[in-house]
Amino acid sequence: MSTPTSGGKMDLDVGNVEQAVSTGALPGWDDVESHVGAAYERYRSHQAGVVADYIPALAEADPEAFGITVAEVNGELHAAGTASAVFSIQSIAKAFVHALVCEALGHDGVRDRVGVNNTGLAFNSVIAIELNDGHPMNPMVNAGAMATTAMIPGATAAEQWEQIRSGLSRFAGRQLELDGGVYRSEMLTNQRNRAIAALLESYGRIHIDPLEVVDVYTRQCSLLVDSRDLAVMGATLADGGVNPLTQQRVVSAGVCRDTLSVLAATGMYERSGEWLFEIGLPAKSGVAGGIVAVAPGKGAIGTYSPRLDSAGNSVRGQRATAYLSRTLGLNLFASDAYSEQGSDQQ
Image 1 (tube, helix red, strand yellow):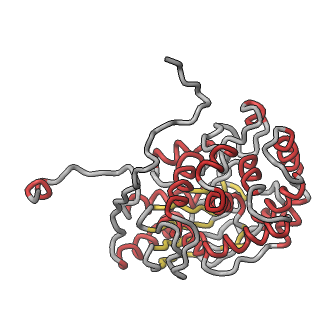
Image 2: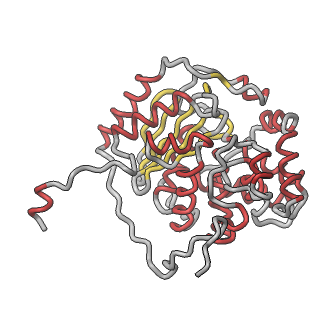
Image 3: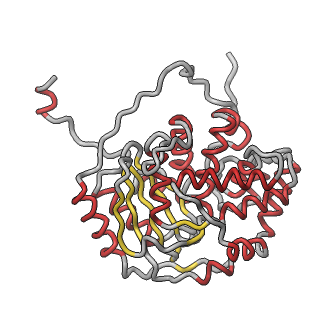
C-alpha cells in the first residue's frame, strides 16, 4: 500500500453525488434596517487604521468615509452612511475574476493550475512562489490572481479585459467603469507585480506576455464600485450565481460554491483563519477599503472605509461585518441546541 503525498489531490469519490442545499433566511426588513443602522452608528467614530499610501491615488481617499450595504437574495437593499461613495475595487476583483475563470474552464482546470491553499504569507509575497516550486497556491494572492487573470478567455489582452469588465458588471448589475487615475498610479508603482508575473512565466504558470497580464490585472483592480455594488456582487454568489437585481445568471451554482470556499480559506490574506474563527463568513477585502462578506442563501454585506489594519483590511469594515454577522445570524458555524419542540414534531 502506497502512502499518498502531501501534494496529491484528494480523491473523495463524490463526483456523481448531487450537492444538497439547506439555508435559513435573514430577519424581517425592519430588523435588518435597524441592525445596519446600528452597525454604522456603533463604528462611525472609530479612528484606528491608516489609509493606504503605497499607491499614491489611494492616499487621496477621505479617511472618514464609511458606508455599509446589505443585499438580500430577494433583491432588497439596506444601506447606511456613505454607501454610495465610490472607490476602486482592488483585490476584491480577484474573487469575481476567479468565478469567471471557473465558469469558463471548470472546477479542476483552475484548481490544478492556481490552487486553493493559503500561503500563510503576505498577499504580494515572492517567497511563497519559490517555496512552492512556482505554484501560485491560491487565486486570492497576487501571484494566483495574475495566473487566474491570464486564463480569462480572449485572443488579446484587450479582449480579456473586456471579458473581465463585462463579467464583473454582470455581478454588480450595472456597467462598471475604470478609474483612470488609479490605474495610472498603480502602473507607475507595480514593479513587484511585474516581477511576480515574470517569475510565474519562468515556472510555466503564465503562457502569455506577463506584462500584458499585469496590465489587465491592474485594470481589473481599478474598476470603480461602491458598497452597494459589493453587496450585490456578493449576493449573486449567495444566490447560486443569479444577480438578485437583474435576475440574470452570471455563473453556475457550482462556481459559487467553489469561489466561496476559496474565500473562506484565503480571502482575508494571512488573517483568513482568524476572520473565519471570529466572523464565520467567506469574505474578500481590498486595500482601497472595501470588504464583501457572503452568507450563502441569504445575502451579502458590502462595506467601505479606507482606514486599514496592518494586513490591509478595513478596520471599520471588519467591525461592522462582525457586528452584522452576529446580529443577523450569518455565521456559518453558529448553531443552537435541537429544540424540544422540534423533537416532538418528528
